[in-house]
Image 1: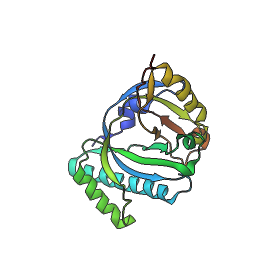
Image 2: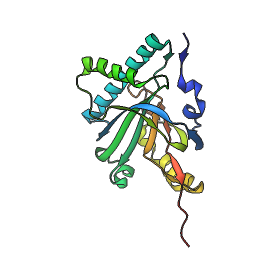
Image 3: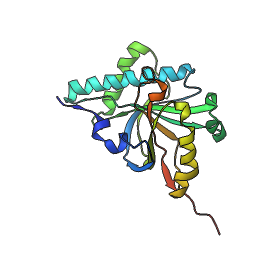
Image 4: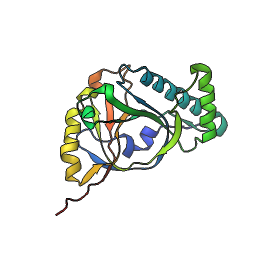
Length: 209
């Protein structure tokens, strides 16, 4: 049985360059998602969300292999990030950050498989987070770049994105800041972490004359 690895099979989505931003048309994809708020380094809700996402995702993977004859590598963890006050996000006041953590599910994963995976996870983890859900995300046109290094060292890259790249292309932000984590932060040195930064964009409104 062939094991599908989406990071290899979808290079436009998972292999951006590290030296420049590139435009990518992101197709609608389905995800297991959980919302939360607070510093991801200290908030218990964040650790619980990650545990639930991986437990459900692996349960779906094994169920799909048994029931549908399809095997795949569980895709990387992703996060949508924002703050009620945008200044708190720019200033990295993480205790005020809001987030949606998520893991992509292949199109052959259906809702019954998701619901069965949740029931299986309950036996291990207890009651699920209230925001746990299975839904599609449509981002469309986005800019993306590979950041190599600590999460806290993303600021210069994001400053260039905000101040140069998006304005030069006539784009404005169309949703929360999006990150895709290609490295396991528990096992990787901060200087070697590989993270895709992918903000969705839309045409910026033209200035009135």
